[in-house]
Length: 559
Image (cartoon, rainbow, N blue to C red):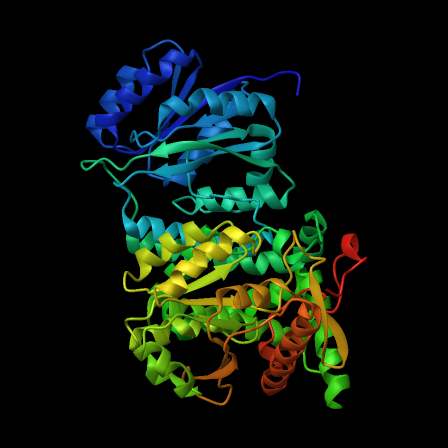
């Protein structure tokens, strides 16, 4: 775009007390200002009439209140009529941080064909109801676009490219109230408009005037999401074509469930309860099944292997992914502390009770079969036990802070590790010496040490298992137990069968016979993992090609 001519657009409804300050602040940027009076009361009209006398201030008056969306659409049309190419929307109530305006202008000028939006940074003044509402909206927008491109769809601090925006407005019947901001962004995305973000602070003044009607606007927004969802369905092939797919090692991938996603899921679960959330899972997991090619193909490969091994008919990969969704729901409940020992049937409890009584540390080796988050419920019964779960993610510290917010009594600490080196061993040895438990999974290779594997038969074919967990357990010289937590698929209410098995006490890897001893340990683990996998084949949650390493490491080592 060779010609860039922006203006400020301020929709106003009864914000006479605040809009003067906003206009005065915007004057510093030397851009024309278009104010839309959305049927305001007489005191506000008087203020707006006075402001319209200033140079470069245009007042467009709507005789009857249209709602924020109606006012913005009227203002966008007026801005184009006046010859502008872009409209920079600023709310009249003073919630937006105007120090971010230069960044908004610069980004809009640099990317004139893009919609530029603020990505809110909130302070303590934000109402929790608004925050949870945003999480839920973000969930639906992600579903409606089949993309995570839209980071926030509710912030009114935006720079609209007028030609593209008015084209979408003319082709659609958009909501005219608080649903507008969300809908116009989704429809612009559908139309191929690039969406970019800048950070902006948002405050909620104690004496601020809000026109958000908690009941009516939430009903409108719910109706809008329903309409957008069903309108999205015929667009699925085109939306999928817009996505860029990238297959790589499982732990090198960015997690789909970011910290924001976790908060969203927790908020939805808290607001709607388990039954409603479970119903919502079906279309979500169907979308994931349609779009997650890597996960779907890995699931089909695994299920075919199970069928070949057992001689039974292959199970459905969709039901496999749906089972994963149900386990995510179980994790939410476990994180919130909704499960206790009444939800568990424990087999092999005698193998760890004496460790608790003697305050001895232990290593528990789990897997991605079932749900080892159930150890949270177990820790509520044995309050003196501190459990440390090792995870291959950089989000562990943030995740712990989320868990502290959700359940201050949570006694499971996530510890982020990139590899199982000497520093990790020293840190964990102290925890073992203090009588704490260390939980680690034994069925996933590390992205940085993928060649350090042991090949062991699993479901009839050699598969790579990581050396790290078993070598670490031997270094810690602690009792080692196996842990498997399987959902009871026949139970009408959430119930789980938790199995503890003594494994080694301790694992010994003698010099001169280290490789042979390690091979035996891993083979024993693989046998027990296979045993429990066949008990609940749909609860296997390794959605990558488990029997092979990534192509960059095909020169794999057996020791």
